Length: 97
Image (cartoon, rainbow, N blue to C red):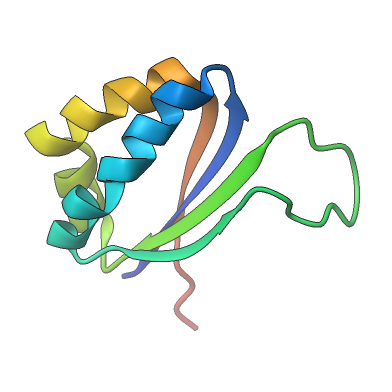
């Protein structure tokens, strides 16, 4: 079943985050993920939002997500993401009626 990854980022070191971003797709495309949104100005419709960027991705299933997130290539580039931004990362299961 499809899973969705929702990431809310608060930038702390833009240069480090930009290094991560520059290498992201080379790793991401190997794992059948889809980048659905990467928005630095999402429209807040209700409540307060203190983050700088929202990222929404999908993977065919949880195993594909974990293969990507635990791959040596992603672990290597994620050091720059972690140095460049505080993140809230959520994994949500898709809905099957």
